[in-house]
Image (tube, rainbow, N blue to C red; front, top):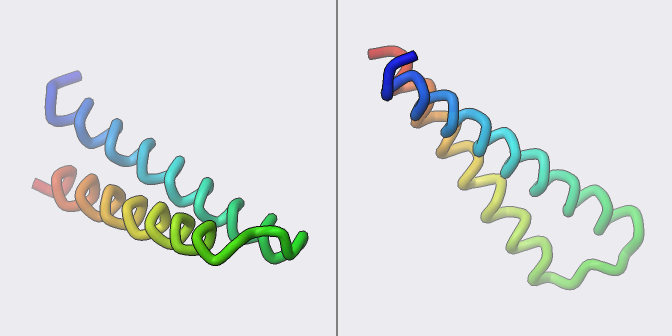
Amino acid sequence: MDARGRRVDTARILGNIALVTGFLITIVGLATDSTPAKGYVFAGMLVTAGVGLRLEAAITDRH
């Protein structure tokens, strides 16, 4: 596998991890009502970063 393929796979995996973590924080926080507002901000930042990494991987893989 070439270097570009490894970068694409790494970005895709890290994006998936960030998305899943962000959504889990939100789901657990909503279910338990114990998450402060800062937790939701952090979860939103994780989801945003995850979407960005997934988009980067898709654009890089396309070329």
